[in-house]
Image (cartoon, rainbow, N blue to C red; front, side):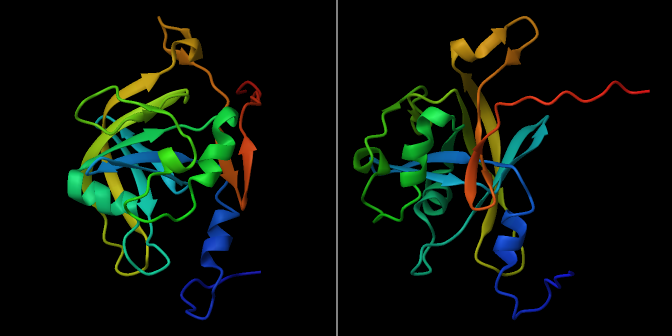
Length: 197
């Protein structure tokens, strides 16, 4: 079956893409505004480049059409901290996707402990295996639609000591969680490709 995405009557573009671009890593994004810590997961997330170190997240709007707090906070303060999700944090990450008022914090609502590593960046979620400390580079105008891709510069990366298995060659292992269609999956199983002929 061919789906023509130019057909404006097609209501399932998100479902088609979300269930065929798999797995999708989850950016658990921490932003801050006037002392309120906002935490929200986004599965349209990818690394763009390692030199310069950049990532991209796509952020939508609230049900009332206003910018999600993550988008509003990055636009205003130009900073965010992206945490990688492991199985131990699955429940709290999932709960943090619920829409809250701008002056409410997911950290307080769902008992998500944070720790401030750098004064210039929002705090990171305390128990995650890895976090990226980012500042704003640019928005990408897609010519309409309700999601805004944000390019972010990665300034610092935190990796929990126990997840570094070889410091000499920078070998890092953890059991990340990703979106698989509407569900989540653990990506801990490693598959070995055959040797090239």
